Length: 83
Image 1 (cartoon, rainbow, N blue to C red):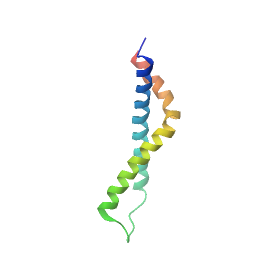
Image 2 (cartoon, helix red, strand yellow):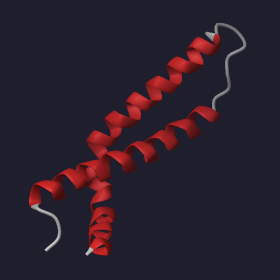
Image 3 (tube, helix red, strand yellow):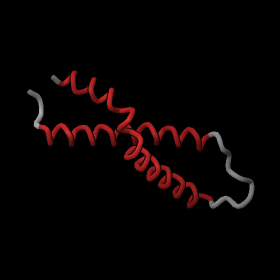
Image 4 (cartoon, one colour):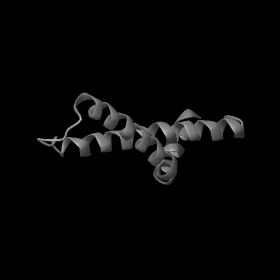
C-alpha cells in the first residue's frame, strides 16, 4: 500500500527540505526587516545580494538539521491524505 520504502524516504526528505527552507527562509527575511541599514559602511546592492544568498544557505542548513524534528507530524498528515 502506498509508495515503496525508498520512494517514501525520498518524498520525506524532499518534504522536509521544502518546508524547512520555506519556513526558515521566511523567518530570516522577517528578521532582516527588523534591522535597518547602517548610515555608513553599507555595501550597497552587493551587500544586499550577498545577504540574500547567505540567508538562502542558512535556511538550507537549518532545514537539514532542524526540520526533521518538527516536520514529522506534518509529513504523517500529508502521507495519510495521499492514501
